[in-house]
Image 1 (cartoon, one colour):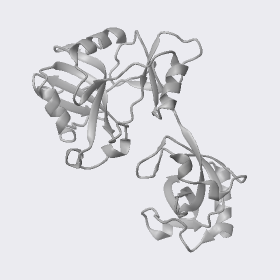
Image 2 (cartoon, helix red, strand yellow; image 1 turned 180 degrees about the horizontal axis):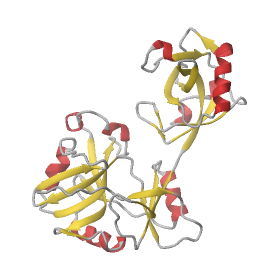
Image 3 (cartoon, rainbow, N blue to C red; image 1 turned 120 degrees about the vertical axis):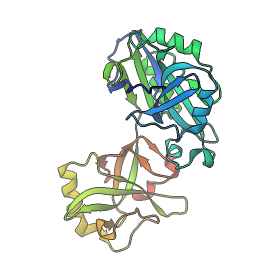
Image 4 (cartoon, rainbow, N blue to C red; image 1 turned 180 degrees about the vertical axis):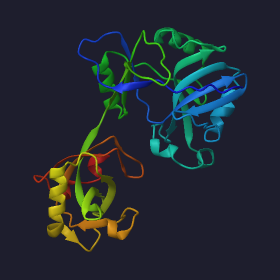
Amino acid sequence: MTVLDLRPMLPVDQPLAPGEKGFIHEIKWDGYRLLAQVDKGKVALISRNGRNLNSRFPQLVEWLQQKGLEAVMDGEVVALTGEGRVDFSLLQQSHLKKSGVQICYIVFDLLYLQGESICAQPWFERRERLEALLPSEGFVLISPLLAGEAPEALNFAREHQLEGIISKDRRSPYLPGKRSPLWRKQRITRSTDCVLAGVKMDRTKVRSMAVALYNPSGELVYIGNVGSGLKSTELDFLEQSIALLATANCPVTNPPAGTTDEWIWFRPLVVVEVEYLELTSQTRLRHPVFLRFRFDKSPQDCTMEEKR
């Protein structure tokens, strides 16, 4: 089998305008984007960057080999917890099959069928062909469509603690390797108040801040490093705060890896508000962004219970 040199179509980060019609809505899955090329028992799982991931997901390869398909599909591999929730951090384990991590390939598009490209066909026709081709069973599921318009779909995603939604023009062709406004994505972010536990230095300049939360035992637990969103005003304030807040004693029970002289620890007196995608099962913030200092808040109110 000759592996096709394909890259996935990508959405733009832009909500639909009020009254904009003709779009369907899907869940934005939190996993690894994957093109699956299947040709009569031969399978190639290709990442967004063109890497072959067969060895990473052998159970998916085995399942596809048994189906006798001749197609190229686009989808997302996700990892599921015992409760059936998607957990991105589980995908990062080194030996997924040995670790017993349950994966699912959620397919949302069909690019080739019986050796012929159908990328030029509108989305709704490709979807019909996908539903006729692929059984939703085992390691594979066709991505469900969300009911209603974009606000209702976004509310559904928010209520179920999903990453967001993807909206697609029903008439959209598939444009390999292109980012197009025919597909839109909207992420759902959360915000939380955290204790400022210290700063990470780049020589004499503050590079980022360490943030933490109190656990049920009253211990301060490091949950991440925040650099995005910090402007010159905030960085200047942090540098000036070193003289007032610095302490030789690390305030968190689980200090992050790194050389000791990179960090200056603070007494836990200041609260910051941070935007993030999720708090992982390893108790780390994903994609945190600084929003503002909260001098009106008490550090003792920044607890794990509030986030669960």
